[in-house]
Length: 254
Image (cartoon, rainbow, N blue to C red; front, side):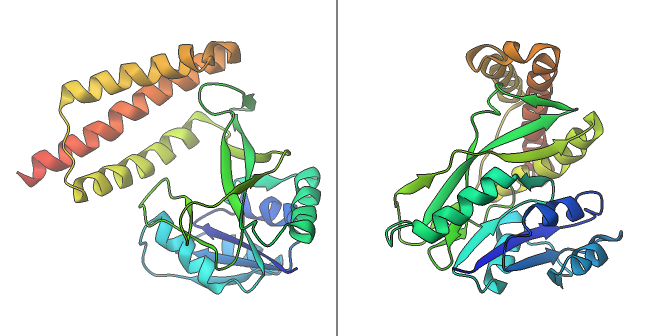
């Protein structure tokens, strides 16, 4: 069975080398880059990846489908540049491809996320199971501008679950969190506006409070210590910001 790894990039020179090295067991690596101004493309090509560059940005879902359309493997593994496949997960993936029944099309895996050097085990960040491995032709990404996900082509199908985690080094510093927050919140607000959604400032405030309570108390964020509090507080601010972005877009439209 042939495995294609797909990923989308923009200015990921600090991540792409280690990311591709962690999936060196694959048969091909497809990178779709949206205008990097650093050495992302050169590093990916040096690692043996097939790199395609795009001049536009259609959103995360559609961009990942562009990468998927270039894959030729029997199986596809979707990974982000700030994620790493451990040797244990690599072995498990290879075993699944070799032994999976014909009825197995989608495979999910647990993901562990690091925040400022600490693994966050609660706060709603863990357990975090994501479908990233699937038979080519059995699934595609939805067309969400942000928070895209893998969707089975033929409706609901059984999902096989792996044991070993995918490692997510998304937020090495607080600035990384705020930088991503801006991108994701603006994309989320644009999508919701296109769907005709509206929101009030009161709704934004309430959603922010609920986000903190859910993460810190209901989802045991307090067990992650000081950084658990920080994560939940930042999630609350992120929630308010994305709702305010939607409010602002709607007011501007008026």
